[in-house]
Image (cartoon, rainbow, N blue to C red):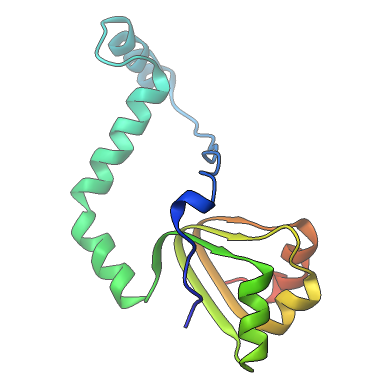
Length: 140
């Protein structure tokens, strides 16, 4: 069972993730036309709106999959204190997150290996390069 998350006020909102997409010239031109006509503030606004509309369209399927796969939806943060408590209890974690999983910067690779059995993140994982390298074989 994952440790309780801290109240959102204690964890600052992480920066958005950047993605790169390739578009054909005609699609890009149509986007620019809609921006020029005032339908959207900029290209990013149109793309975010389109993605949110598609996610809303498939919302039921996402909710069912989250439930079926027992994923934590949103932000899950693991501190050194959390992992030490897991270790003291003689347990390990199977972390499954749809959104953002963060492992505090002061978590050592040794502590991560001792407490994290597996790690599945659909979205983004923020952890130190050393912790990511240590967990590489356990990331699914």
